Length: 306
Ligand code: ADP
Ligand code: MG
Image: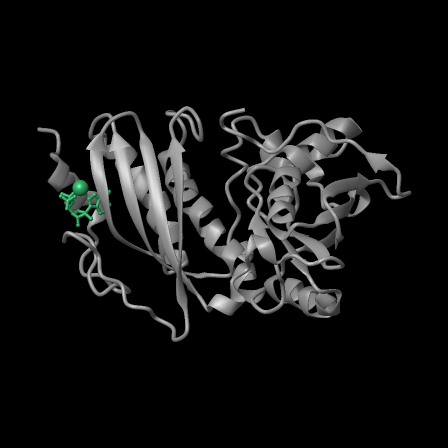
């Protein structure tokens, strides 16, 4: 007898009494109390579809990891501390092996970040995973996309381009941990604007620039290109590193006076942080080489409807 809906939830997703939440899986709603004074709730949703964000045959633990990691990446980019998440899941049938693997990956990263599953919905259909995360951040410390100011430095964490190079972008494109999520918290009151790089630097930086009504200059020679791209033609390196997507690194702006503080954060978290350019008045993004010559990047940020 295959498991029914409620046995499935009980077996895989109900892990007993909630630890963080007042009330978790099993009632009509979960109940969450704020953990920190003076904080507001940061909420974000990301959806993963088989065939679009991963392949049906992919390791289910990696899929479970990625489903929550992309959401935690959004909390980090807001400077928010993870608290809880809900999971809306569609599966075509109850495949206990797949579900077991999925939960292994999902709960490993959930436990690592203290982010508790507090509810969800389960239905039959083509594999679809929709996670909503809840985090907390003092409102004045939130790293908003509209907060960049002319003369801010532009920084990026880690290296860029490896995920876009990996076929399928899942195995190597696993959002990295734990540095960048701790980075979001460390950047409270240090950075101004931040975004996580899901669609490629050019596109994602464009979102900060639109929201902040500003422009930017980026020095290609300062961009931390992943060593996996060594030896590729320069135009391909440019495209993979700046328009590739799925890197899940943080891109942020900060006042120049905070350079020392940011370098100290990088050392403390053992995370490379590269200063790649600056915010300027007026619209538009200009990318230049080491000698200041303008560069064009073909390919734009990923757009599901383009
Ligand atoms: P409702 O009828 O109120 O929508 P459901 O019968 O769908 O409730 O779910 C029963 C309980 O199980 C609820 O508390 C719901 O939050 C939880 N739940 C359902 N699916 C999941 C899931 N995939 N992960 C975690 N909790 C789930
Ligand atoms: Mg329901």
